[in-house]
Length: 368
Image (cartoon, rainbow, N blue to C red; front, side, top):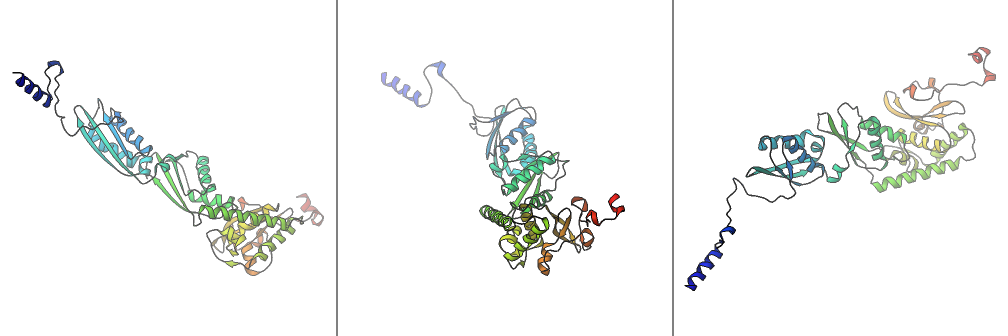
């Protein structure tokens, strides 16, 4: 008998049953699919929360995510398809960052467990670096900050009503700071999504020179500018300074006309020139010498062109450095009336007119 009892006991242990009735447990299969353990799943109760949960994973740059529905109001499977589409294609951050998103939805008893697998076209660092630029000042500030640090990518969240011309902002900043912006980058602008109340404007700035090369060339430009200031240190008048600064330029190189990726550096340090590079180089050395100088953008013979207006001891004059070098004419100063081949917005720059000394003016001219 003892052997029979022992045998029955062993069989009960092997089958997982207990001789004590209160310790007996039973399990039943799930309604569908396999149960997965998701302790970090985001709990949602409606379509809006479902979409927001997906966006939360995207904004954090997560490649995988888990969502669990509890007391959900709506059709989970239909709402999930809609939420994925809206989050990845209709919202700014999703349209900007996500390449594609795979999802799996499993019903477990009275709730659903959703798994997400996200593939990105942008890195988590790019997503975290998105800047708000809801005013013209913020937009310009973000673009200029990226240019100052030679960043190659910038993403800004803007409103639908904003007017933004990124290429113009880049050109203007390069005109304003030629000592630092030795290269004008190529600009590529993309908008995500194409329609909507808010969008992300993505700006890719492509430089031919590396970051280290840009720093080296900027430093070389500043050394040349300082050398020019030393070159004219004993001259007092605007006219004497600009004459000698023109000599400083022309005696450094036998210039070769041509376009380069770093026009200001080429004009000051390499002897390859175009009108833009020479005009910006002349402006830099004039300003360092204490002579007011402007870079004028306009037309010459109907083509885009760049030249200077310089202070001339109480007046201002146009100077076309590229033409003077090409014609070997010396520094030629011109009034507005001498510029019949040129067109510019005269309201943006000082007038260049002939100023007669008072002793040489008629009484009527003095009164007027």
